[in-house]
Length: 289
Image (cartoon, rainbow, N blue to C red; front, side, top):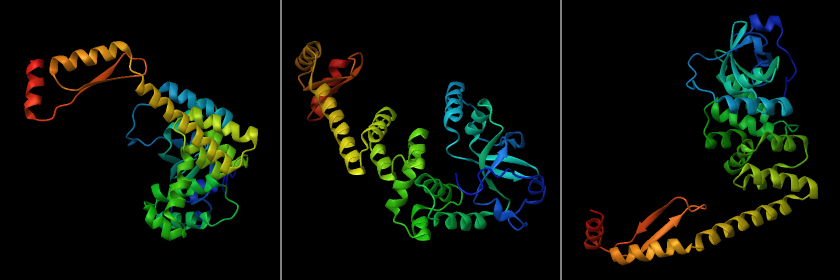
């Protein structure tokens, strides 16, 4: 999962490396290292104070089976590490029984060094698409670059960066599929075009089962979306008789066009009243009064 994964911080680095100018700082900044959970503490200024217990349990279960997809970000504080981002992942990892977690380490004055390390990292040829996306995201979030700045800095089109970062919205199992080479980033983008995790999972499984190429995956995604749109249209077109009757009664009473839109189960909805001028509006209001 990038350079440095598996390299546990030794006692010397814990105490001697605290700023970007210290010897050995470059071994931390821009790399991923494993940090013992016992050495990590939460940021007291963390704006989030409530963590949903069920969501944490679900995340813990995912971490047990798939590991941590996106490392946390920590600030070195002497021999300890303060959480900058990723407290949910930290809490869930403790629940999952992990003794150490992958992390990016920030130092007191490492902004420029971090940017240099990340930009250098993005040029490597052995990065998988998810590692590339994570690096782009860090440059945007931690260094504060805009996509335009980042595009110029790494020599990539903005659309390339946008499409890359969107892969991070995929579920961990699909991201792992990209990382392991089961599917490509192109497959990932086809999967991302669908609007629910269930549909994305189904397409992911079809791609692997039927060994679909990217073009075939895009076509299948398009078929799924078209079928969904047709289903929505049919549901919108079919108006139950009791709704039709209510529309006609209201239209007769108010002397305006009336449309009643209901949800899929018909238990709730909204009434739309058309009026052509102020006089018709006043007439509607008069009936309501």
